[in-house]
Length: 87
Image (tube, rainbow, N blue to C red; front, side):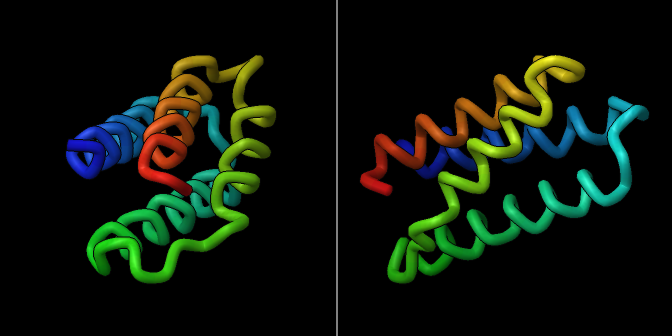
């Protein structure tokens, strides 16, 4: 179940990034890289979790929380799901 929640949140994040036109391309790339890393880890059944991934996601929440609260909320949901999965 957490894998499905995580994938759902990642899909929502991607959709939000496509809808919001004010996000800098470098920031989009950073989030795309982070979500790609999460998807890869899930596909590998969590054999190689990256310990600093949550820290990087938390930094993204700080960057987005004022100007893009929906994106920040989705990233927070991803963090919560990862924490629930033991990361």
